[in-house]
Length: 400
Image (cartoon, rainbow, N blue to C red; front, side, top):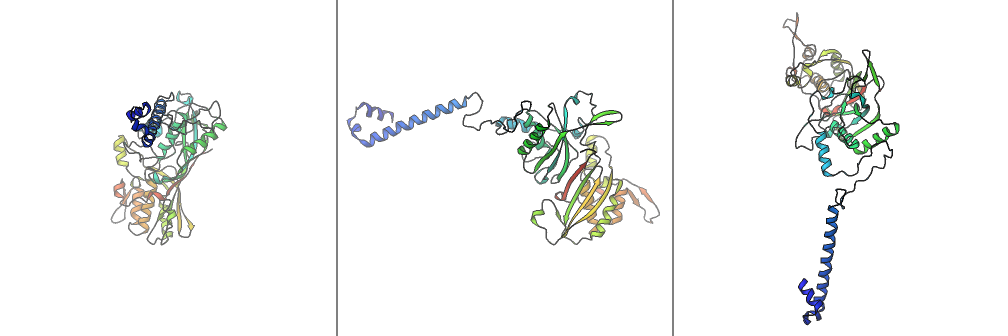
């Protein structure tokens, strides 16, 4: 093309010079080559931009909601691939089984207590999450947890690692309306800063997780000393609710928050069976993975728990709710209680067997005496109730 254009301009070949078609294509080729060179020059300049980003890529925009000089401004709108990778690795790191105990009981005179402790309420739809607690699952980006998502956005917000502790763990598919969390920051936030933080967190989080009632956690006096508020140890009791439907068919809109019982159910008998769980009992036969966790930790785990009250509430139109007021629950404990009660009510398990498992007693053949025996989960052959019906409704504190 260059040779032809040179011949045209220099007029060395008269036939080419006189041909209008040749002249047209030659000038068109020249314009295309010039455009390609100019575009290439801009691309090269953009790659060497001092900001470290391509000039055509998404810009790092300031978050306009945070205008206070003493409040760290985040870069929320666009984050480079490298920073995203580092953030995921940071928040998906392996945590020990007892990581919830970290920074729980330090005295206010300790070095760690120089940070400011904040607390908040969290509500979430657990359908798409693998439970509450962060877990290490390499090469699986779909393995998301509620705790992991919260730590990720807090770490992005303050541009440094931020860990949170929850009042309790929930299984995969289980929901929460009044979960409580705590996290420590080196920054003291005033009332306006806290409101803006709450707003920004909810903008950064997925729509199935929401944070609310963020505030500074107060000090607590225990045994003559002042300790920082603890999401776990400061809790007085918890309320779990399990929802189910006994109609011939259940609305599809309820499929993620309620379980359909497809066999006739004696509700009065169900209410009576559930009352057996009230009081302080050994729930080893109604918990999951106790033996495995004991072997992993190398220590025994207490399975003695207190259930203050169990109520079977009729919500109308074939819908029911079971409310469990308790101090604390073992892994899958509430779901196992519901599952065992349903099996007894359906006639697939003897009620006396449930009582024996609960009270850790074995009846003699002549019913003349009972002997204490330790039952484990394998002695309870009933399955836990499905997770979608369970919700952590509220965690109760003295002043929160």
